[in-house]
View 1 (cartoon, rainbow, N blue to C red):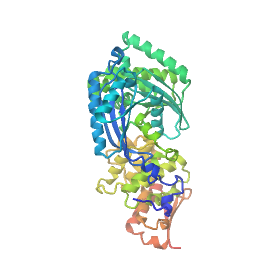
View 2: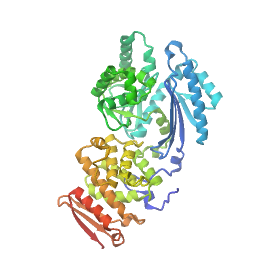
View 3: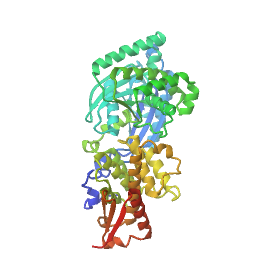
View 4: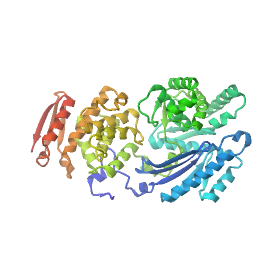
Length: 515
C-alpha cells in the first residue's frame, strides 16, 4: 500500500498530524526481533505493525533460571545454561523462518555477574551465530525506562524493574530518562541471603535505604516492570475479582499491595497459581518479590502504582526510533494502522471524527484522542459475523495491545464501538466490565457509538460532503444538515439511526436536506 501525499486525508493536518506508518524510517522498524537473556527467563519477541505502537508478532519465553545458585557458585546454573542455549538456537531458527535480518540479543544480571558469563556468550555465538551483548545495570535501567516511555510518552515517575537477580530503578521526567541505579534485590538472589526471613528483611531494608539515598524523593507514579510484579498484579486482580484481565496500565495502591501480600500468605501457592494462570517457577518467586515491593512503597511513597507490560525489550525497540516517531501518540498511530489495514474505506475515520465532533463541544484533548481512536476503529471488525460484531468490537478493543490507554479509556472506546453496531448494551457478557466507567462515561460512549453508527450510513468517496451536525444542548435540539448529493443516502435505515442518536441525547431532531 502507498500513501498519496496529494490526498488531504493522507496529510491529516488536524489534531494528530500526518500518519507515520509509511515513513521509510518507520517502516525500517517492521519485524524487529529481540532476545532477552535474563536471570530467570530467556525470551524472543518480534515486533511488527504500527511503528510507534507495534504488536507482538511473536513472543516466546523459556524459564531457564540461569541465575539460580549464582551467589554460592559464582557461575551460571548448569541446567539453566543448557536450556538457554537450546532456547536461543530455536529462536535463531525461528528468526530465519520469519526472514528477519537478525535479532538483537542482550543479557542482564546473571550473565554479567557470572564468571562463566563470557564463556556462555561465546558458546552461544559459536553454536547459533547470535551475538549476545552483556549490558550493565545502569544500561538495563535505562532500557527498561525507555520501554515505559514506549507506552507512556512524556511520562514522569519512578520505573522499578525487577528481574531474577537484580532490581533497577530509573527516574523519568517529561519523556527523558534521568537518574538510575541497580541493586541485588532480585528474588533469585534473595533466596541465597543468609539468616532466613530476618536476615533477608535486613538485607532488603539496607539496600533500599541506599537506593533511596541515591535516587532521592520519588513521590510521583511508580511504574512496575518485570514478570514478578506482573504475577503480583494477577493475584491482586484475582483477589479483587477485577473483570478486565489486562495487565498493562493496571493500577494498584499501597494498601492493595498489603492486602494482596496477606492474601498470598493465607493461600496455598499451588492452588493460587493455577487460579491465576502463573507458572510454578514464577509463583515460587512471588513471596520474595512482594517483600521487596512493600519495602519500595515504604521508602518512596508513590502517589499511585501502574503495571507496565513494556520493559527492556520494548526499550530496545524505542532505542531504534527516530525522535519524530517517538513523539507520536501510540494509541492514535496503532488505530490508524488498524484502519489502513482492515477498514473497508481507509481514511473515512478522519471524516467521521470531524462529523461527530460537534456533539462533544466541551471535550478536552484527552477526550478528543479517544473520540479519534474510536472513529479510526469503527469499521475494522466488519468481517465478523453480524450477530457477533458488536461484542467482537468490545472484546477486541478492551484486550488489544494498545499503549497510552488507561483501563477506563479502553472500556469507553470498547463500549462506543459496541454501540456502533448495537443499540443496547444490556444482555452481553461484558456488563461487569462496564462498571469500570461511571454512568456519565457510559452515556457519552453510547452517544459516540450511535453517532458513528449513523455517520457510517453517509459513507462516500468524497468525504467532505457528508453533511454537518449541530448540537444545541440548552434547547435539546440536534440539527442535521445534508447537501443534495448526500441527501439521497438519508433513507429509512439512516433515518432510524439518526432518531436513535436523538433519543440517546434526549433531543428533538431537526433535519434539513439541500442548500
